[in-house]
Every structure is written in C-alpha cells, then in structure tokens.
View (cartoon, rainbow, N blue to C red):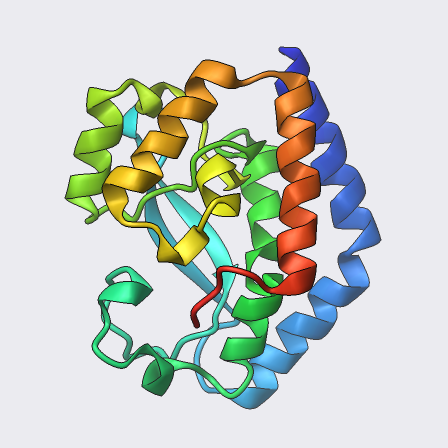
Length: 188
C-alpha cells in the first residue's frame, strides 16, 4: 500500500467515524423530504476508465435525466426540497467516503466523470489523466467547479497530474474546505 492510499484509507476511516451522526441525520432528512432511495448511485469513470458506482445523497428527484447537472434545461426544478442545501454545503458528497475506503477514489484527484461524458473522458485519456484515481475534490474543482468548460477542467487535471505531491494534495484539501465554507463555485 502506497503512502497516498494509506493516508486516504486512514483519513476516510477517521472521517467516517467522526461524521457518522451527521451522515445519519442527512440520510434521515433525505428520506423524510422526498420519495425514493436515500442514496443515488451514479455510474462514474475511475482509474484507467473503469466504470464504478459512486454514491451521493440524493439531491435530485428520481425522474431526473442521467446527465451532468449543467446540461439540464432547468436543473432547479429537479431538486428535492433539501437538494440545493445538500449540494451547496457538499453534504451530498459524504457517502463517497465509502469509495475512498474501497480504493476506487482518493481524497484528491480529478472528479470522476459520468459514464456518458464522452468528451471529458476522451480529453482526459488523451492527456494521461485517466491514470489517476478520481478524487472527492481536485485541482479543477477548486479552480471553478461547475463553472469550468471541459477543456479548462482538463487543463487543471493535467496540471494536477504533473504537480501531484503530498504537499499539493494537502493544499488542495485546505482550499476545498475554504470553498465549501464560502460555497464558492456552486451553481445548483
């Protein structure tokens, strides 16, 4: 087990224990405010373009089309009563700790593409970004999140690939915490 994997596993285990009560509260809130499952499992593209299932607390109605949110004509109409809060607070991402424990994700890396984001997958593959484990957060994430066009997102992913280090990952985690607290770069 490499250093990054050991740190990811240890931090995910600690975070899961510390966040157990908030995770249960969010799960209960999702259950009580909209019909359907608590978790939404989406097909995502992992390391070497392998498809895996990534859980999120469900913030959208069950009849929402399976496309990136920014491609929906009016995404707000698909949000559950607490969906906007879950997304803006990033609480919908908490179940992804499971993927980190499993080794399918890391805390830091390119955000996993949806299985049908072919343009993003193709560009990442062409630049070697597909060699990386996807992350809960990443360099592109803190440099624009939902606001970045795909070529710009891949540019940041490539920069992360070239600069990755333990120190850079720590910096990205701290910058992510600041963005989440300030709710910057989140559209829906």
